[in-house]
Amino acid sequence: MQKRLTILVTGRVQRVGFRGFARLVANRYGVFGYAENLPDGSVRIVAEGEEEMLSRFCEDLKAEDEPLISVESMNITETEFHGDLTHFEPHFGDFQKEMFYRSELGLEYLKEMVKLQKRSLKMQEEMVSALRDMKKESKKRREVLERVIEAIHTQGVG
Image 1: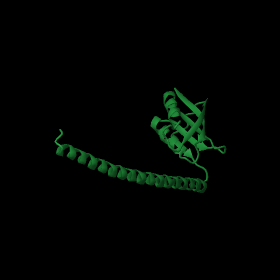
Image 2 (image 1 turned 180 degrees about the vertical axis):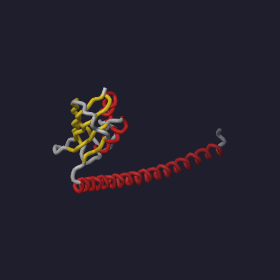
Image 3 (image 1 turned 90 degrees about the vertical axis):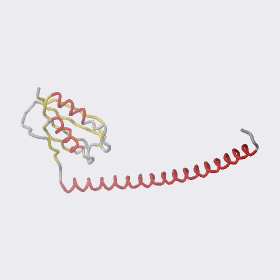
Image 4 (image 1 turned 45 degrees about the vertical axis):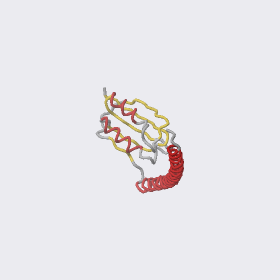
C-alpha cells in the first residue's frame, strides 16, 4: 500500500550532509519526496512509497553508521498520499550561505584531522622508541643468557 510520511528529524542533521544522505537512502528503496532544513536546526522529510520501503527508509535514516550525522529523534506522521512526487531531492537554501557553511565545517573537520594525525604520529614515535628500548634490553638478556650457557658448557654441566 502506498503511503506518505512527514518525518521531522532532530539532532546533528544540518550542515553534515544529512539531506544528501536521505536522498541516497530514498533512492535505495524507491522512495520519492524531499528533505529540507528548518530554522530550528531540524530537517523535515516528506516521503512517499510502498509501506515496507518507507519502513526501511525510516530505519536507515537513523544513520547509525554515519560519522558526522547524529539523529536524536524522528517524529513520523502519516499524511494523505498524493502520488505527485516523481523523485527524491534535497531542498537547499541560499547557495552562497550553504557553500559558506559547508566550507567552514570542512575546514573545522580538516583541522581536527590534522590534530589527530599529529597525536597519532607522536604515539607512533613513542611506540617505536619503546620497541627500540625493548630490543636493546632483549639483546642484553640474550648476551647474558649466552654467557650463562657458555659457562655451563665449559664447566661440563649438561
